[in-house]
Length: 465
Ligand code: GDP
Ligand code: GDP
Image 1: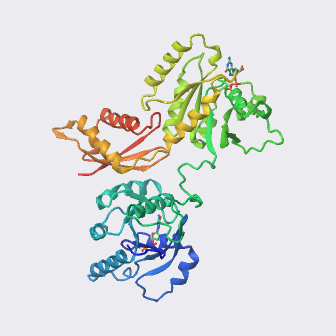
Image 2: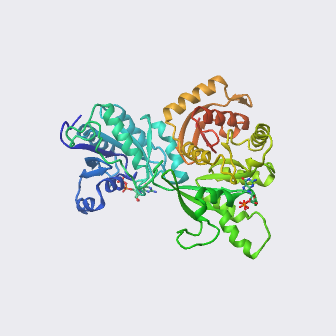
Image 3: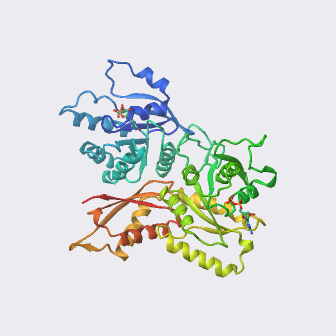
């Protein structure tokens, strides 16, 4: 430990080109960083005042051996890293998620694993699919949980903040040494990063109500918005953009994608009622949560399933609302039948949440938004790597993966690469040979154990001998 009452000290280490300067600039703010960037000056570190949420610290990187890559590099790297460890309260160790783990990264990790100073492993350049997959290789470095970052775009800063705070607290270091007496940071402003907010209640939740013609979409939306806000025309006073209606439910801002309203306008010109595939796809793409409205009297139709399938394919949180429940005679039997049919026809997600409503009487509508919010929460779920792997080893022990061609398949390691929807990478030998049934066994287990029922969870299989 370095600082007792002085400012916290944060070091950024990693091989050349992983993005240390970019992260440094982000933490310090460009202006300060530029001052230090005098060309021609050989520097072996650069230092500035950094800020991340309510954390204030001095940050330095270990630039200096970028220009010369020769045999003295290993020695200099070692010295610099040891100095960084000795001089800091926490070390941010970056690797390049796009390039994957390299031998030099491994050399760094061996040095860092010995240190008493807390290390935060960061996969930088983790934006996009390519980056996420690369980031999943972090386990090789043996430094525990990895924070996925994009220093360039600013993604992952909340995770970085939380991880730094956790690591410091775990070592008994006060993350806020300059705030005398403020033990639990009550007065501190909540950290509001500009990106990757997992669940910011102030950000409007994007919800689309989709379904076949005549299932009651307009009736439902009018009910939800209140009769005084008819949305069938572009009335004055109602601010709406072309695709969504602003709304709030119990103080939570919601953007409601209104396919019905769009269609009502078109109806003036043409009485022809048909499902507008374009509108539905647009609505699904726009939404975080898709409410599929189905006419409970008519039952489930092929078109309903096509829409559900589309929403899941796009990775959206899906909930099914059976409407016109007032017109259903035998409630219990109908519900059992409808649910059974859903399970049969949507085998890719077990346990899609179902609500029964009546847009006409208003019955059941109080359950609709809570169901949507619950689905949204599950859709945002992040499972820590350690828990995930504890579960994986239990699941593969209870029911080992089969042998294919005389050789056993071995799922070895799993990590969550992203949320919204939750996406996991599974490392194993011969990923191309994993039978669909075993894949489903894992997915269903994941959903059940980590409370992600009804969520279109994704599993990416990666080779690892
Ligand atoms: P350093 O040598 O470790 O200080 O790395 P730099 O900060 O100079 O970055 C090396 C290169 O990676 C530069 O071209 C950056 O623009 C790029 N880079 C840094 N962070 C990111 C990122 O988050 N995503 C992507 N795609 N590129 C990045
Ligand atoms: P949309 O085409 O999906 O927008 O459907 P509408 O909202 O225009 O409704 C189609 C028809 O179903 C209308 O005649 C509505 O009055 C009727 N309807 C809508 N919701 C309900 C309901 O909860 N119960 C009953 N019995 N009829 C409904």
